[in-house]
Length: 356
Ligand code: KG4
Ligand code: ZN
Image (cartoon, rainbow, N blue to C red; front, top):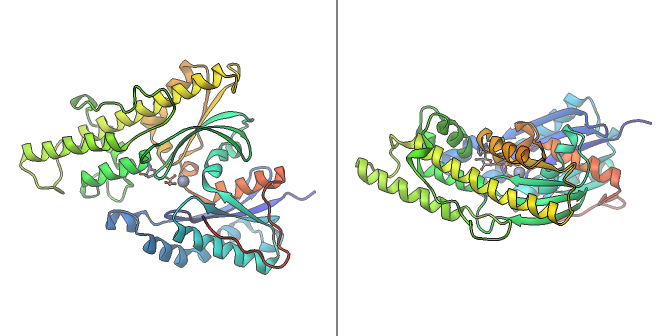
């Protein structure tokens, strides 16, 4: 019996990704084009620019992934593409390209939910059975859920405003970190992590959000305002204009990162207690899985690792390159869905599918 092969295509935000993965979890070929540098220059993602860049790169990226894998489109069991959530204009490019291949080669199509793909990536790299607690931290999302099956998630909490990556990106922009000599072309969150390593977090104390809320939700916009206030005050004290680099950026970065980590840890702790109390997870083999772009932050990861250790949870996190957006997670989600017989659309007389 030949291995089943799936091509995965990701274009939900600012990464054009493609990969071929087999049903044993081997990554046969992958390619990725990141637009981050362009978006850093404009101070945020402009959807039309993202769409244009996806259009310019999609064909090359898919061809590269296929050629590295040595697999031809004819040999694929199915083609999977992210259809939601994300920027509609970006999603449309990957979807349109996938459907072109699907209809030309008469292949089954597997629509993928981007967050489901982030949540299941861990089953590609580690042997982990359902159910497990999963925490997704990215630029667009902040979700705590119990993964009970391939497409079966019990939502425990999410951000009531912005996601942690969004907050870190905004703080980084407000601090003009792209001008900092140590942070050349780093994503906002990464720049904060880098500077925080040599900063003193105790110089500033930011109140941790939602401490009196008896649920598992998150909030980051209030925290962002608190950090902004300190930045404005420091600029005044130093006699600097908005946009000029503060001498204390490292300390502010360290304190902001710490507050984000503490907030995330506290909400995740509540979710752990809830799952054990209601027998959703067994205390004997409970697992916490963390993924998404912000999960590549070593400080936040370490804090969550300690939380898991203290509470007897196993702690699993995909390697950083699979935590951020990529085609591999989409192809793997396709394999998971194919194996479970879920949501596979068969091409009879042409598939049409609307993104979002
Ligand atoms: O998962 P992802 O690649 O894309 C989304 O689906 O959003 O996450 C991107 C987010 C950005 O906000 C970026 O600043 C953040 O992840 N990020 C980090 C780090 N690397 C990327 N945040 C904190 N620490 C990092 N090392
Ligand atoms: Zn993502």
